Length: 141
Length: 316
Figure 1 (spheres, rainbow over the protein chains, first blue to last red):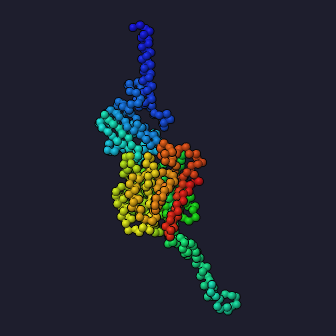
Figure 2 (figure 1 turned 60 degrees about the vertical axis):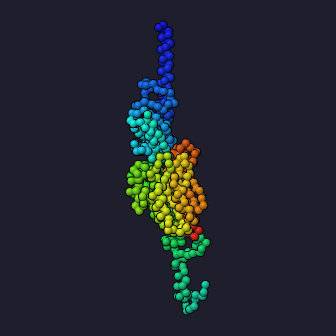
Figure 3 (figure 1 turned 180 degrees about the vertical axis):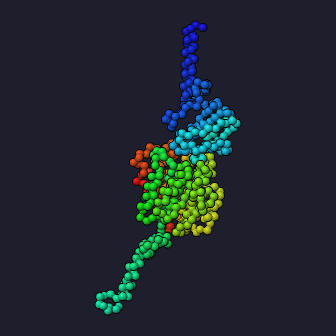
């Protein structure tokens, strides 16, 4: 292959990786101004992700943010074996309790986290025991 | 006045019997008052007078959230103390103090201890409590019931009578369901039905509970799912006042003979329904404005009219 064509291919590959890295960062970084230091759960180099809009993610870990009395994303789909971590960004305490009593967090004050690894497929509905109008769902498939 | 002087022996215009008769009027210190349109009299210094006459006052405080230490209030114990000072400064000491829940922020023993300590200095007859969700969520009400469960039923509900008024403390923060609102539950409603059974419709009723019994704002969970069932049981009474907390602001509604009223918090204000993204503490309230958004409620009761005058005041 001619050197120039190789160079173009190399630059194109770099550009493509940059695009992928950027969209990964958008997906995994905590929201700007969020309380406390929080490292992205997934390192962008490790794997290729689908576009940021998708809520499907592989194992290791994904986040559910608690902001303004809301679980975000409210419905999260993950693969079996995924560790889900909830983090509270509100100024009031919240909890995470499965309606089927499969998991229950301690009281989460601001910046506290709770993690649970979902091994079995199924739908797991949960809510906050202090503000029971707050609900969320984890779909494992 | 009939002729008192009948024997004017000493020519000084006074005789012993007349003197004693006159002094009887002065010595007893009679006080005439108009109460509910009826002229009645009572002697000074009789503590049970107000109660006998059926006129008394009580105070309501709510949402002290001891343990909370973020914006806009880093010292909720101080603002609770201020509320107690306001109560103590009132002309007539309130006969009762009602706390409509969220005494603590995280139901920790130390937080409950602080509440009890501060309330010791309240110059009131007796205090009654109902829990808020913050008082029960970490340990299923274990700490709360240990301290305030004596003489109550089930999740902590109870009733008592004072000066002809029937007070009912309801608990609507236990056994909460996902996506729901506050809830009373079948057992408590059954108890309420029995509790009201023997009472005449002219008995003034005061219901106090943490979460509003009427739907204030469903989206933020501000309401009680089965509140309507309780209200149906109360409908036959001529005067019902429902006193709540939870929403950290004053709101009032009248429906037939039922007056609904929510009190301010002594800790932090919350936004009006829909006026913010969430019902959390209003963080950006200026320090000098905070106390004007916190407060307490004073309720004056007059037996003859069966009316309660509900007066809200702020801490500044």
